[in-house]
Length: 402
Image 1 (tube, rainbow, N blue to C red):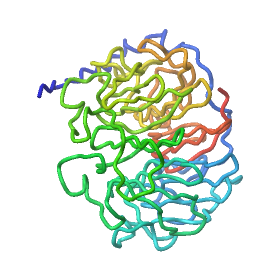
Image 2: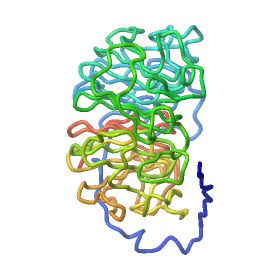
Image 3: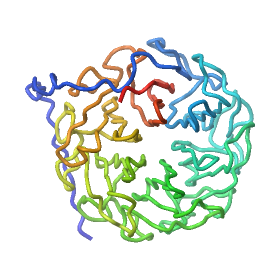
């Protein structure tokens, strides 16, 4: 095994804040005002009180899914270890949820509801997606993915299928072993359903698993693996130097015009395959955020970001010819046009910062409506965008301009 130790060499020198980067023009990604904000106020208090669970509160939400333009709407309330659901997309800020999953009531919290693991308990739910007529949820710290064939409409409705474990009562990483296989998981954070296939970012195993058809059996093994050359490997960057094949911390998954896109947060980049990969360990065709497959430093080894650099990108989504990336540690959203899917292409659209050269959480100020702090999840659905603004303990829905 040949593992290269990567040394980060990041310079914060003021001279690197070049005027060209600060004056680069960009497209405003969103309309001026959010359509609705849930979990916290548009202008929350500078010092917030402890966030007690309730039907209107969120604590570090890392994922949200609008199953249709009018709803239902489901949020991973990650810090409270639950899902909150609205039968319709709310029209008013701080609208109470209609139902919950993972706790005994709206006012309780705790991993697995301080109970035994079961088909409706949760431990750090993160990724969520519409899957046919239902939803799939990455129940990360139970090392499993839960699937509901129909979107839940009542509190604590049990899941229909579990992946990563043999049944609903187990929650050990890689099923209690140090060996990965086609049916095990370790911290599955991201999920995506496309063209009848289910994709899971099995983050702790540094890979993406693919099921060629929607699974209907508990513990069903995956059909394809990306990021590793076999189902039994789980080394960081497949045990070698970073490459177009390997992954360090895969998280978000989407398709942009039939091209598979995976946010490899640990390598500060996004991997893109032309079409759907068909072989285990198939290398990506394009990389965004780095100059080549071997470089993996955040912001391309510079303290200040650019229009072509990334710092721990977690969430990812697409609308038409646009790939939208939650550049999480830079507290911004970037959008690339499909025509620029190569290592030298620049993002053209921006949200959350005043220019491509800024990176502060809430722009280094008190949070306001159009500022974000560590956005973990983003979803585009037709003309709408959903942002899981984790650091501000809220989820917002916007009208897209791109």
